[in-house]
Image (cartoon, rainbow, N blue to C red):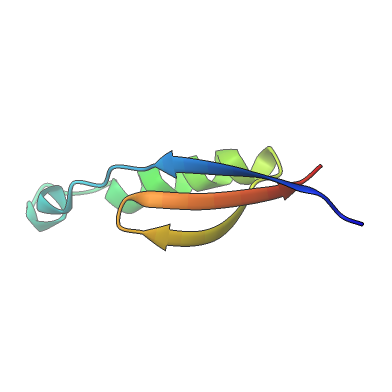
Length: 58
């Protein structure tokens, strides 16, 4: 039987910065963090506001 471990991570995204004309890297920062977690085997399972749920097989 497969076994999994779970991780909850708060990824704060300041939506006000997205409204700023100088906004350039909000999505890039989120993408970079998600890719870091993916390289460690974490798979995104869900999102609730700024709380991201991850799981990986152990």
